[in-house]
Image (cartoon, rainbow, N blue to C red; front, side, top):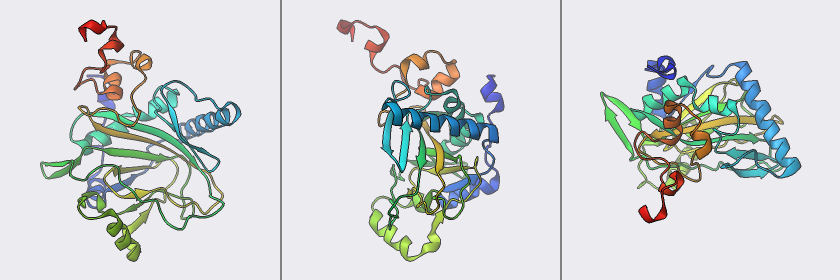
Length: 282
């Protein structure tokens, strides 16, 4: 048995946590990262932002920025950019939670890290959205499983004014034939359905990507830093330019490479030319 498998818990969630995510579509898991891990991730993220502001250059190949504004800096596709990013994405407890929700082996689908700051003009509404149809679920032994789960860990303490992720509770099971605009309007009329994350640094928001959610509105003058990893079953391919860096993947153990690339279920690299196969044989 591999070292990561020995330390990956199953079940990773307590019965109360499993019930909470079943009902509401999310759960806050405390103490996922310790203070040293938090500090290293924060320092690395600030360093990447500082270098970008100074040089305009990305920290490595096969990564990209979703946003580079003064109030929202985000770096995407993390595993090969810094050891602390890789350690977060492969952390056995996080992978264990993901696999418990998926109902089987997981692969990395998305990874990004954010620095968010108070906007000079406070927005008047949330940017609610969901990334996947709630239909991609299944049930086994009485438990609800879903194909896309995210683990978002806040690297700063989140109080009521610090912009914690905001969700419309329970919407992970509302089908897409119910208009999203109608769901949001109904929730705005019943504010108890809108839940905002308030938790100490190192806490992880585990949530279904089918849950309607939004970045919180920052009212304080504190930076909000976070790191996020999304997981899917191994047969799924990476999406939205989150393909793994091939050179980095080749340096990994079989188990870590499978987690990063999904190669347990399909040949990777997907393009035979990446393996040096002559074009005439492709």
